[in-house]
View 1 (cartoon, rainbow, N blue to C red):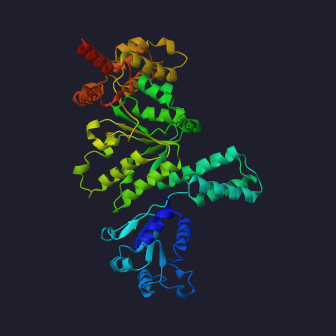
View 2: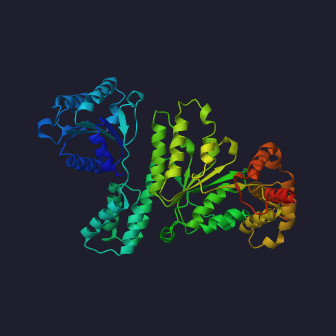
View 3: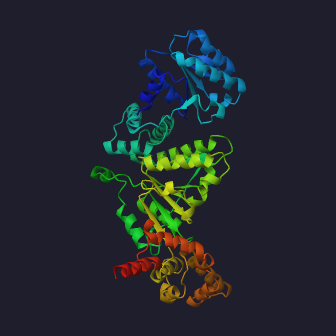
Length: 508
């Protein structure tokens, strides 16, 4: 349902108080004016704190610097006169006891009158005592058709003609931006070289990065990691490689839906975060990192508002990868948190979006403790697949050593015995292998020589891997994965061998 259709439905149903959180004040007022015209030419009164009411000659300046007086005008007008009252930035006055009481009185009065109050605000902030009387409406960012009209208008103003392919690229890159931002960034491009070009797509992407820097909710994470930088995890790599072109127009014509996301569960240091970075680089998509802790704020309603803003930002850069590291820590113990249900509401908003999103935002979430995740997160439809990333096998440890040594000592790689290193490091994770190499380099550096295989083995002998210090936790994770609740990321991991052995015993 479009915004105009839903708004007109609210007008006919006599919803007295409508709250629209949006940064696009001019665009939403245009949409309201259009709906007012289609609904019998309703009068539209617009108020702001500095100028009071303006537009209607008889009421210009009424309520100037006085929000209570602005509300009093509404009940003074004839009861049978259809009207819409647009109050800009009125969220700032909702905590005032007299304003809140007046709004609640008006909510009762206007149920029998063809009048509606619309509160416009750049953020959603609703006091608890007004929660029942205010109806929140989402004002979506401009759709592709509206963006195309705006781009064509700017192109016509320059007198040039764009190739259809260039026009499509610009429209696609502008999706997720407000009309004002689209005008600014394309006007900047026109001012630079007198016309619009295909290279201006990069200017649009830079505008989106600027939005991210301003909000401080998401991090734009540059990455150079490749799929080949991941040692082992063959099942996971195959799954990712098959979906490399799934965001293309060719995939849409084929009938494929956008990939939804991936949950990587497993032991710390086994390459889950590296995988998220490698996906973005391999698929040539921007990587956004979400720190869930930044969503939570002290004011009532602000956490939910930040969550919606995060979703809007991610969709603004779509297609993109949204990486959520250690999601289990963010949403563990929902029922036991004493935050008046804020965490539960944030979680509810987030998982609902994951299930219903139609934009190409691929969510990569990592978790170390699967028991801490709410069951709703693991339901089908949230992620395309759940992979268990366990400890590497001897063959995979060989590959991990080779990847790191090729990066550190590409010219002397053959002087290192990767077979012996892999054999002598059972239960070591990828992160522990990397730390072992760092320690070996310290040994060699302190003695003014290059580090050797023996130095690596000495460093390994002094390290106690997590698999031994957190044996019970890891055993629980492996039992969970062995029960068939997740796909195994590795074909030849110790857990894969164990499951195959169980299957052979069962068949026997």
